[in-house]
Amino acid sequence: MARVNVRINDDLKDEANKLFNDLGFDMTTAVTIFLSQSVREQRLPFQPSKEPIESVIARKQALNGT
Image (cartoon, rainbow, N blue to C red; front, side, top):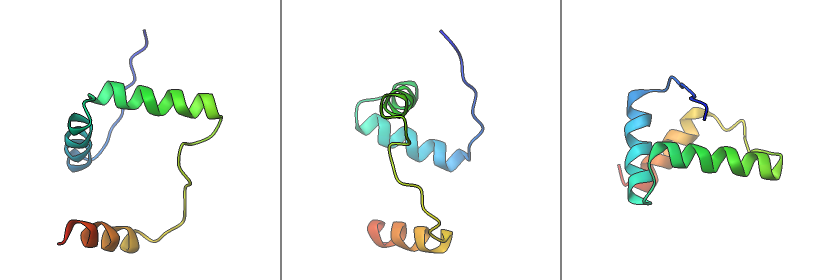
């Protein structure tokens, strides 16, 4: 079995861990699901966009009520 090391922002890691735990997964399982789906479908399992970061932040804040 291979090991993958990824450098990410601490806050992103914490938020992702909380989400995955709420879904019943750990980080390893979530990443494995992402990679498996990518390989199976031969594409990213989402549509990348050039949406400005300000729009992403505003949408996230609106969804969170902050």
